[in-house]
Length: 364
Ligand SMILES: *Cc1c(COP(=O)(O)O)cnc(C)c1O
Image 1 (cartoon, rainbow, N blue to C red):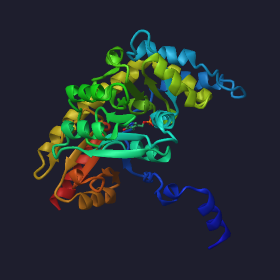
Image 2 (image 1 turned 45 degrees about the vertical axis):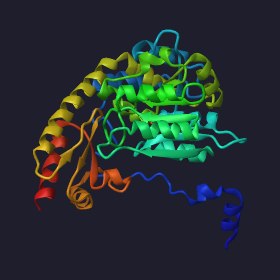
Image 3 (image 1 turned 90 degrees about the vertical axis):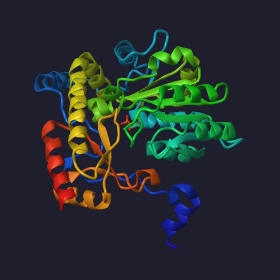
């Protein structure tokens, strides 16, 4: 064993050493339909204005750690209820880590629970924080198995339950009543984290229901709305709870460029909202076109992506790749996703390029 192996074995945790890195496919030269990005940029005149704002930012200074202007704009524009504040994360990925760090304990193993398949960062962040993770399989139709969720909650007493609403990678919204039943089942010992990363496309939210439930946490991101590159997530919950979570947050976790860009984008929210509306319409068109292809099963979607089942997902994925179209092959994630592909909804042009390539892959 070399010196560096010895060093790594004596310093880095065994579960970290055993883990695989988070794999991101190299998409250069491809039509990129794998990562739920909004395909539209800001219009040119707004980009010019933004450039001026960014040029004026004092890069030599630390951010003002309260982030009060940006937070106030989020509260005012994004439906946060009166009396509620937000904390900000470097993407909602960081907020997931913050939740796990705040709940992981040394004295007893704390548990986080989520339906599975769901967003992979729930399991990764849970594990790296030193919590146990319990995944409760979805039913074959990809809906929530509420009795199994409630049993698992009674058995494991999780500190955190993550509910992606709508769910990634399946695209469906879990039934609102089922989520309420889970929030109530956690009353007194666990937090229900409703992850609304796709809220612009679902237009369904638990944000306004925060005052009903002290253990409800609503998490969102601007990534899927069209600002994935600036890395900004926000989370709201009861003020006392928020204050505890905020202790774990690194004080300057949002950089000044992100802060200014986000404030600017929120001043022009109608532009992003219109893009989301266009993508919702494109989603309907793409789902209808896919449903017309023989042998293709299209699952319901409230997100900016569509889950489909095909006769041979590996073959379809490879054929799309050979035509320079990158989608996500989720078929190996979980047995309920056998032969499934996840396709991000894009511009009408990119969607029809995908459709042509996909139809050819199915015909051949
Ligand atoms: C994309 C996604 C996120 C991550 O959002 P970032 O703010 O970009 O870190 C969180 N949750 C779900 C369910 C997602 O699909």
